[in-house]
Length: 116
Image 1: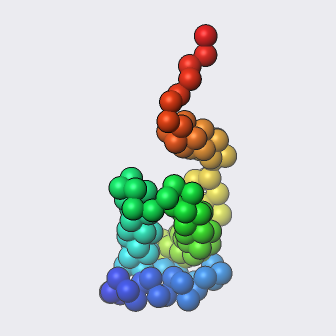
Image 2: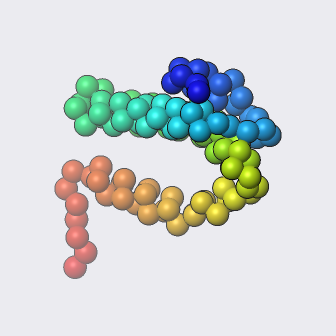
């Protein structure tokens, strides 16, 4: 069983590796790391410790930094349970990005205007 820091180091070291397998502890340790990082960014934003523009930039770079290793560890975990890595494509829905982007832009506006 991997420790938390070991699973994060392994996933960041295997940045572009989709072949092979990922153990449960590697997968869930990295998922916990992604959750903690996201929680910290949103916590800083909500408490106004950093400016909104800076938090958006940090969130964007964190997303870019963690997107590829998250994708690769998901593919390796699918290999470990005996599935093809292409099953991850079933989880991608382009409508989600449109909905989440419009919801985020609505929640950022200070005074929403309603049509009519």
